[in-house]
Amino acid sequence: MYYSDEIIEEVKNANDIVDVISGYVQLTKKGASWFGLCPFHSEKTPSFSVSRSKQIYYCFGCHSGGNVISFVMQYENYTFDEALRFLADRAGIRLPEVSLSTSERKDKDLKTRLMEIHRIAANHYYHELVDPRSPAGLDYFHKRKLSDDTIRHFGLGYTGIGSSKLYKLLKEKGYDDYTIKESGLVTIEEKGTHDKFWNRVMFPLMDINNRVIGFGGRVLGDGLPKYMNSPETKIFEKNRFLFGLNYARKTRRDYFFLCEGNMDVIAMHQAGYTNAVASLGTSLTANQPSLIKRYVNKVILTYDSDDAGIAAAMRAIPMLNDAGISVKILDLAPCKDPDEFLTKMGAEEMDRRIADAENSFVWSIGILRKKYDMQDPQQKTEFEHKAAEQLCSFSEPLERDNYTRAVCTKYMIPYEELKSLVNSTGNKGYGINAANKSIERPRLRRADDGIMKTQSFLISSICADKSLVSQVKELICADDFDGDLYKEIAGEIFSGTSASELMDRYAGDRDMLDRAAQILNYSEEENSSELKAAVAAAILRIKQNSLDRDAKNAADIAALQNVIKEQAAWKSRKIVLR
View 1 (cartoon, rainbow, N blue to C red):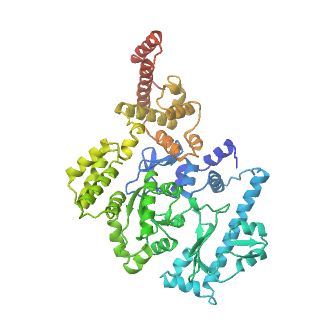
View 2 (view 1 turned 180 degrees about the vertical axis):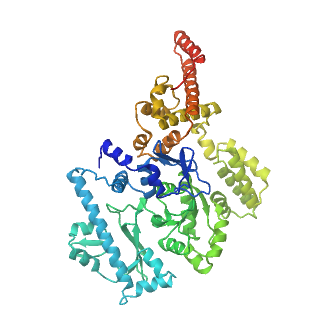
View 3 (view 1 turned 120 degrees about the horizontal axis):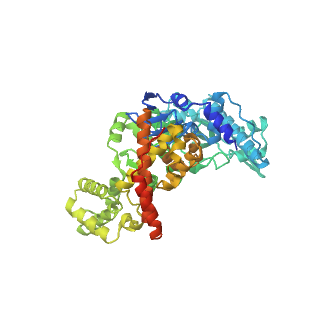
C-alpha cells in the first residue's frame, strides 16, 4: 500500500518515540538521551539510546537503530504498513482508504480468507484432540510427557482416520472449493475430496504474530510419511519460517537453541528453554539464518546426535557463520535428541551441557578426526594436514592462533608443530584466507576512523539542533564529506530532511538503516555553547580534510594552486556559530 509522506509524518508526530518505546522498555533519562536495556539482544548494562530531539533510537551494543516506525517493525516483526496502522490506532488517527488494483485486492482477500481457514482448522484440530471419544491424540502427547498447559500453549491438535470433517466444516461456513484447495489443508480432485491430514497429531505453525499459517502432522502408527507439513501457500513459505519463533523472539537470552523437530522445541519450552526454535526438517534453508540474525547473534545447535543430525549440523554451521552468527554444539549423548535428553537426564544436566557447549569449529575438527585411525602415523599426519587447512580459513591472525591453540589442547597436538603446519599450508594457497586475499576489506586507518567520527558528530549535532543547519551549510557542503553514505545523509539534512524522515528512506534495508542510525545518534550534547564550539571545530576539520583530498586529486598545477590558496584561507579562519 502507499501512504503519503504527510500521513506518515502525521502518525510519527503523534507518537513520541520515547513514549512509545517506554511501553516496551524501561527508560531512564541521562543527559539529553534516554537509556534502557536493549529489547533486541540480552545485556546487563543499558546501551539502548533513544533521542527525543531526533526521534530516533540506536543500540550501541547490537547496532540496531531507526525511528518509531522501524522500532515497531523490528520489535513486533510488522511490515511498514502494519507498523503505521498500529501507531495510527494508538494515536487515534484514521488512515485514508488506499485504493488497490483488482489483482492486489483479490490477493489480499484470498490471504485474509486463508488466515480465517487456518484459524478454524486449528480450533477444529484442538477440539478433536480433547474429545473423549477419540483419545488417541491426547494419549500420544501425554506419553510424550507434555502437560495440558503446554498442549494449550502450542495449540496442539489431532485429526482422526479417513476424515473429511475439516472440508465439511469449511463448506458449512461458506468457503468455496477454490479457497479451500488454496489453503493446502484439503485435497480436491476429480476422483474425490478428503482432508490432507488424517490419523495425525497436529502442530500449528504460527507466524511471528501468533497467527496460524500452516500445520505439521505426525502420523500415529506406522503410516508414511511419518512427518508431513503444509504445502507452501499464499500465507506460508517454509524457507522463511521457524517453528517456535513467535515465542522465542521474546526471550531475554542472547542466543537461540536450533532444533530439528517440533517436539524438541515444545519439550525445550516446557522445560523453561523458551528460546528454542526449529526449521521444518533437518535442512536449514538459505533464508533462515538471516531470520535468526534479526533476533540473536548466537546459536546452540541441538540437532539429533545420529549421523543424519551430524550431517545436518555440518551443513548448517557455515550457513549460520556466513550470516554472522556464532555457533556452539550441544552434546546430547547418550540420548538422540533434546526431547529424549530432558525426559531421561533432566533440566539440571541440560544446564551443565549448555554451559559446556562446544565451539562449532572445534567440534567439526572432532568430527573430522573420527574419519582417521589416530594409531596409524600416516592417517594421523593426514588428519593434522586437514585440520591445518581448515584453520587457514581464519583471516585474522589472532583468531587463527586462538583456534590453533584450542585444537591443540583438545586433540593433544604439539602447538608449535601445528602452528608451523598452518603457516606452511597457508603459504601454499590453502584455505579461505588465501583464496579470498584479494577481496578482503582493508581496515580503516586511524586517520580515516577519526574523520568518520568527526563527520558523525557534526551530522548528529545539527540534527539535534536544527538552528545550526543553515549556518553549517553556508560553510561546507555534502561533497566535503568522506564516504558515500555520509555525503548522502549530509545532503539530506542540509535540504531539510529530519533524522526520523531519513530512517523511513532506509526502512527497506536493515543494514543501511542501522548504519544511518549510528551516524545520526553519534552525539547528544545538552550544553549549547559547548556544542557550538565543538561543531565549529568539526566544520574546520571536515573542510581541511576535503581540501587535502582535493589537493591529492588535482588535475593540473592551476587546480592545485587554487586548492593551496583555499587551504591557506581556511587555516586562519575563525568560525563562530550563533
